[in-house]
Length: 139
Image 1 (cartoon, helix red, strand yellow):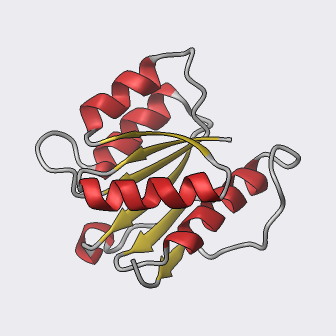
Image 2 (image 1 turned 180 degrees about the horizontal axis):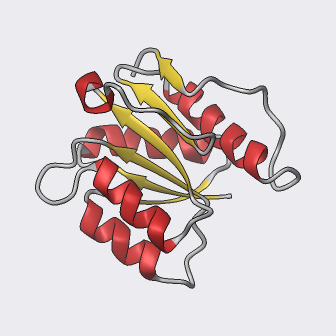
């Protein structure tokens, strides 16, 4: 499994990268949607799951990024992480989407990423228990 982590807050990005590494998850990390789309457009890069903050500063937000990413790679699974619950108010989620509200537990996020990949693509990674679409914890 390969993850593209998109987080504009360098401290949060580095923290999540450490937890992904500890979980044995291959990942690339960037700080904005523009850099993320450049990686997504590179067909030599394997990306299975996009983990994105919703508020990415200047440029596209995480929702716009997810739409563009799924247009380019329809098989991509998405994990949103946000402190802005209002951005997702009244939104219905697909089976290929998960949400983590800040603060959250980075271990739980890494487990959810692995489980999302396993649920969509059995046999590709270790099977883990199902996790609901919305999670809040302690990052």
